[in-house]
Image 1 (cartoon, one colour):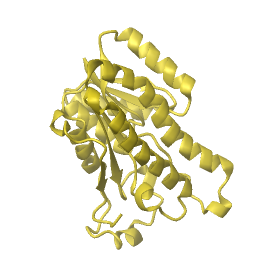
Image 2 (tube, rainbow, N blue to C red; image 1 turned 60 degrees about the horizontal axis):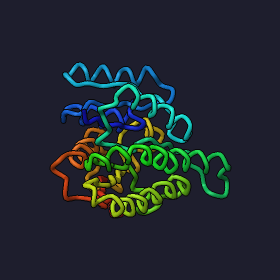
Image 3 (spheres, rainbow, N blue to C red; image 1 turned 90 degrees about the horizontal axis):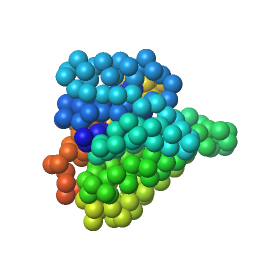
Image 4 (spheres, rainbow, N blue to C red; image 1 turned 30 degrees about the vertical axis):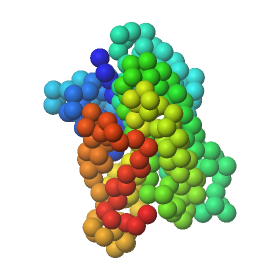
Length: 242
């Protein structure tokens, strides 16, 4: 079977993407680190709509955790492979750079950038052998234009954008596509601490986006309909110039 793996799939954009991919026919692997209850809720919502889902806990920034979880999954699913990988896991730890702690820099880069590397490297083998695969990286407006107070987050997402374009060229001959979506301000737990009323004035559409709107774009890029699109960074930000 052709599975989809969504890192950070228990809440927010990740949950919406899990639901979207399940609706598109993928059995979904819901990755999470510690919030099992939220992951179980995502699984319940998928199954309630007739889809199939499994939990796959591991820490994307811990290579041993990644390898162990994926090795065990492959042992239990010898005839299956991950045909769609959504690298969604990420965190914000905002601070002006002059006040930024080492941990704030390393934690943000480790989860977004190293997590992308550790997981994608493992999943690519099956895609290349099957000559079939969709990789979609969830980046950010912050990685395209930079945002003050997010030097760490902007650096992580900008690096993923460069990696997306490079990897797309490496694997295209094997019919594996690699794209990224760059959300702007989306109404999730990650943005609940932001001043939405003030920020809306800078968004031409006048509102924050919804996770389901991002998920619809991810679902398209993960589908057969997007087979001739690769190496692209697609903004979804309500019209903010980036």
